Image 1 (spheres, rainbow over the protein chains, first blue to last red):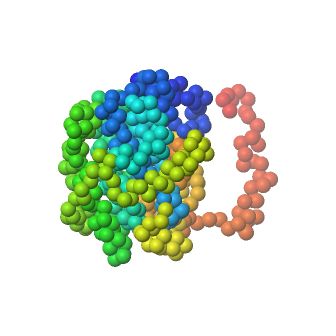
Image 2 (cartoon, rainbow over the protein chains, first blue to last red):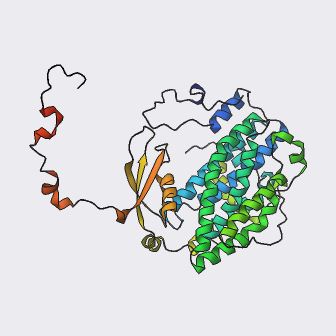
Image 3 (cartoon, chains in turn brown, blue):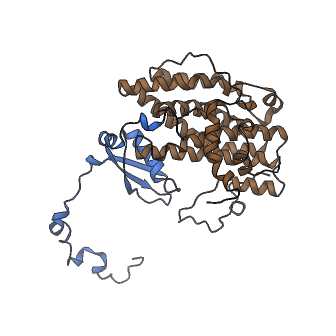
Length: 288
Length: 110
């Protein structure tokens, strides 16, 4: 059963009042964990594996983006990137909690106690931040991929995947706007900002191909998931339109090998995981 | 984490950037149907980005349903030194308050 976001009782704060600022009501990872505990949310093996891919993408990106906090060109941009990182972390927590329900594992078990080869994220998400323009290029690709993905996933035959996607799509819509605004401004700013935007896109574009590769799982999962290749045409169209407006060329590089969905990663992921997992592994069960 | 392309090496000095981006005043209308209220200020390169930054900085906790941003230099402010002539004149002028007047007999709903 999917928690009804309009059911005040189901989501906790029954003292919510119309005259006070409240957190609002939306599907939270805690609600999914509760449903898993009560045995009302149990994904099939395939659905769990699929949720793991989406969750790992978001988790690794959140970790990457979090690195910008206190390092962005402006305080305001610190907060913007931090917000986007937290949105992604929220999606990751939901997907991982749901995936873990199939295997009796918590979100923390999956985030902190899996090895590199067990992660299913695509290579784009683990790419180093580079300069601000490179991060914007990565965000631009990610948002133009995740937005149609989550929009289609809302129609999933799996009610929990549908509910997670319904919450995520609104947030990713904003990420899309954020990256679009910056691509246009960096491209149309100074010679230096334009040079960096072009360099950033050239750096990140080889990792586009992997996002839209189908495999045995995406073929088996049917109506519960979204066939990656079905999103490619829209991605080409939406990114093409913005790049045309920015008077930038779509990079023509050959695509990188990929393999993230099978656990084959570049040298970057190990470093991300080392930083992300060290505390939980050094002090298992620690809370802070 | 140490990486060859760390942001520090390529990001312009933040203090320098702050001089280039103009200041904006942010007004947020809460969901209670009140008027827009001044929430604070921020830096942004243009109005469109100012609105987005305002969304990120001032509506993180469900505070609002509408945002206005105004260039700070477009706001004319009263002079704090002329407090006497500007704001103290109404003192003692009770007749400017509705409560000064007695209600006529038989008038309801006042």
